[in-house]
Image 1 (tube, rainbow, N blue to C red):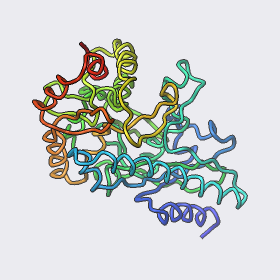
Image 2 (image 1 turned 30 degrees about the vertical axis):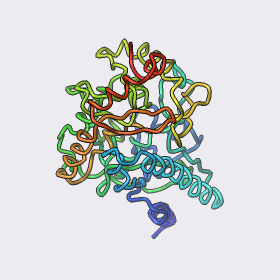
Image 3 (image 1 turned 180 degrees about the vertical axis):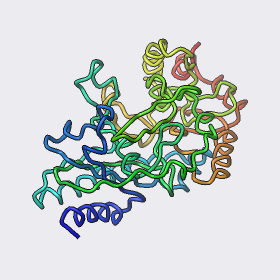
Image 4 (image 1 turned 180 degrees about the horizontal axis):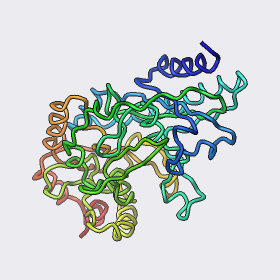
Length: 350
């Protein structure tokens, strides 16, 4: 085994030893022709390779989250897994750098390019973990555009970019994916983020990948940001207590998001949470959705069960102490009726 092969095997083993459920290697050649966020030299001049890995989220905490039994458990697991992914990238980058290979640890999340037309609000990542992951065989694109691995559909991705020359790993065989376009991910998304008909096709190193076209990212900001979250039929919700409408037209999303953000500002603070660079005044955000990823599972019967957990768990309201509670749609309406007009305006239009 030559030095290149040995180092390539080592970096994969490094990630797997630290808890990854999958890991792979991409290079400038295998990423050639890809979107701007596959340009490794954007973060490290002279970069030649990248190592991408997936860390699984806790299935038990996902179940309790979807069934509205426990919000904090999955939120904490998600935050900590993101920290672990970023930390693992730092560990590997530091190790290789000490071995004479300058390397760069890519943060797991919430890093956006500021040199695009809209700046940070374009939400274009410095490096796309998703694209590197599917090209290097870490996983496949599911219909919703999330990366699913052979063993887990709910994962946090991380990457490390290096000047070391590594051997690329191959994409997973397309015919072996367990995504069968069941559309359960679509059904669990209140924002209408994914286009039902159109697909996005990405070519990297001569290999094509596709997933459902994503509509305005303000849709995800509005719902996953926690500003609103009740289904149109009023029978179920995300963990958000908000009831602001989600516009049908993407052109109206910016205005709707701005109004919901300002209206929700006086809400009591939810315990826990995390900070996001796009949130004004350093206010915290909380995980209230992520359902398109969390309902997915390698077992199609489990997907259906998770969907049913979500749909049958009721509607979330917020109490004056900031705590969240799921209750029946009827009880939720009664709860809202007890609020003053000023309090109620934090959650829904008058």
